[in-house]
Length: 496
Image 1 (cartoon, rainbow, N blue to C red):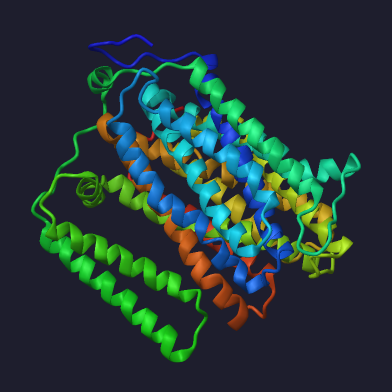
Image 2: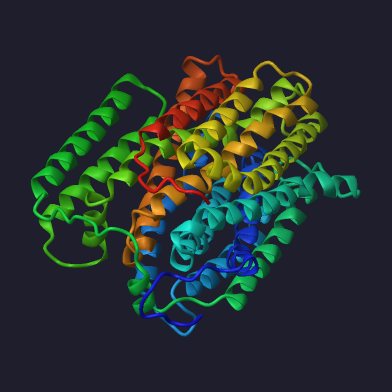
């Protein structure tokens, strides 16, 4: 891609946007296999239902640690392969190897560790893809770019989520001896490794990147107002977060509460320590710059953080409890070795494929919605549809009608993957696109860690131990997310 010293960033053709987003097909193929099958693998290896949220902590925690660092590094990278594409390649290779290995783990603790490796590897490849759209596209085309990513996420997830179901129909064994993963899941993960590597390879080979000087010349975002000298504020926040974490840990220990609440305590204390460490360090390095960038984040990003919190809390509740809810309520089994349970678990794969299929269709409709009613109103409508979809699962009893629930979830999913990023990208300068996309991931990860801490506790104390009630909490949270987007200032709420 040629360098331009002045002027507006050129618009890309449909096929150029297609090629730059195609790698997300593979990334989401891997994520969909993870989301639809990891709880099943954990239960197969002997995990109890209330332990599942804690075992899932690996997934969001790796994103919390990996994405800001990868974003920071990719902002400062320029090689013969480009700025973001070296990370695409490294993440694709590692994630593919992890997918090949995951279904062969012999013990629960190894499976938990493998989830760390898989999720970290996918995050290495995924984080620069968000910044890649901001790098390559002018503001007017960014909603289309992020919607195209949502389309590929939907398509990849449909196939990946349905693979165990389809393989069973082809005669592959869907049950296995106690402690072993069925062949339907095993072969699906093998296929996922190949697809992930191939799709990202296509994007790497079929795209080019603007060099840093061209990106700087094209930059249309307003400069960030640096607030150096706010160490007192950072110190106060650090002390407050550290004390809050310590107090929660003491309450959990003294009252014998659910140990998963230690995750929330550790999260608070960890952020507190990070803020305090920043006030003690004078060196200019990756850590201090990332903390400073958190402090100096655009106001639009801070408001979007609230939207993201409630959205991803809802999604995490759905991902970790749908298998347990559907197998118990709609298929009448909690025994992971039974045919009914495994039939229900396969149907969950179909449901996850369905919401991703609806998301692919929604991704086609979203640019039209944005032109008609704007970015914020579009996200509000889609989030409410998602919340109603999750709430409807409480009353639907025929598992086939759950496909209707997934239609609402699909529209919300497509919107969550595109419109907040379109709102954000216009407020972030090109030189910090990667690190701010990584920091933005905090507001995806933190709600998942909060969900992992609280949902098991709430399930056992207030929700009668029934996983379906966790989905109800998710539905309410999704609707709240939609309402919160109205607080986001969108001076450039433009057409797609």
